[in-house]
Image (cartoon, rainbow, N blue to C red):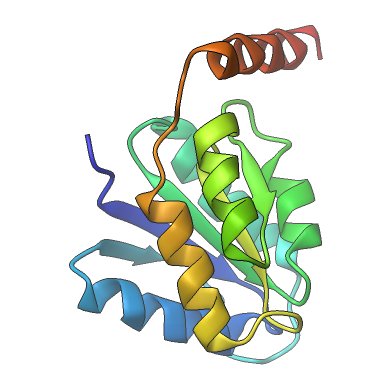
Length: 151
């Protein structure tokens, strides 16, 4: 099943790149729900990580989340606090593809201050087009779920 619904969010540093990626996704036929922010005015990234992660958490195997901040790191740390959310910071295509292949990541975090628009498009394409490989990787995901349950 190809995922066509994407929740996208950003803080003030990520706002311009979020807007660019939103248009990029819409032009490719994705359904995109913008969870904010709506300007470059100073704001707090956990607000937007929470909004996207909560939506992905409802249907972790059916939708994707995209989060953009200065480095992608803060967004990733926040999103990974949610059970069933597997967020990864990626700044090049190889990691974006493998985090889907091996980790079945459902949230892509991008750093607007470290990734330009063209590269961000390529990273996004690699993430969205990759498929989870299952097999030994499913065993590892099951282990991650056990860790979530412990905590």
